[in-house]
Image (tube, rainbow, N blue to C red; front, side, top):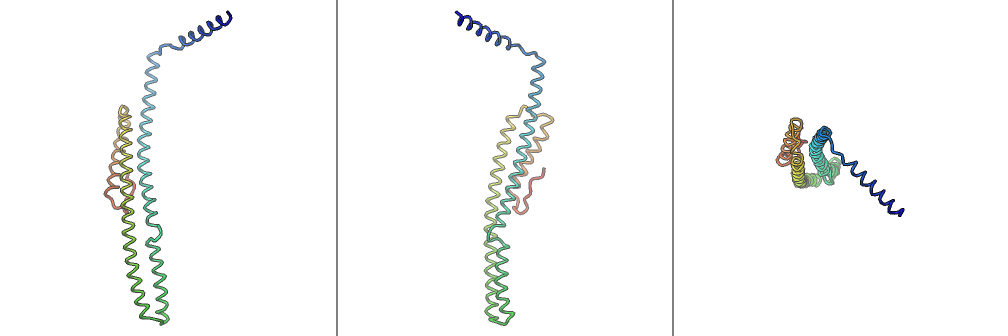
Amino acid sequence: MKSIVLSAMICAAAVGTSVANTSVSRPAEKVKKEHINDQMSVAAFKQVIAFHQRNVDVLFHQFEIAKGQVRESRGNHADLERDKAFFVKVYQDDIDQGVRVEASKRAIAEIETMYTKKHEERDAYEAAQLAKLKEQLRVELKREQKQFKKAKRKYAGFVNEETLPLLQKVEQYFAKAIDQAQYADADHMVIAAR
């Protein structure tokens, strides 16, 4: 008997609590919540725009780092010049001392020819590597642009006079960055101007 009474009291308390919490919200509170949600969504949209713009900057920065790594990798032009200078100096010392003068002059000419060819090979290697890097940059920028377009569709309802200039600016930023990655010379590429 006690358990039945106890169960009935618990059920009554649960039903009473659930009925008490289902109050109808007043229209003023609902409008205020919608306004706050709109403001939060506009702020989130601005953050998404800034995020994608920052990603473009990061991609260009990574490109510059990779370009530097290619140019400073083992066997670069500076290494070749140091090696050439060493070998030429050895034979020049022989010439200065009057030892094997003609043979040393021929050896220096061969060294000059050999290192000219090595510099050309290095130029070709660097050009191929930079072309790969430019293509990777272009692909990544296209991928970033697709992600930006998805975000733009998601927040399409929040485009207003405050966000429209930012949106247009970033779209132009993407266009400049992609054009630069596709058509610019790797030596003269700079981060797309904001």
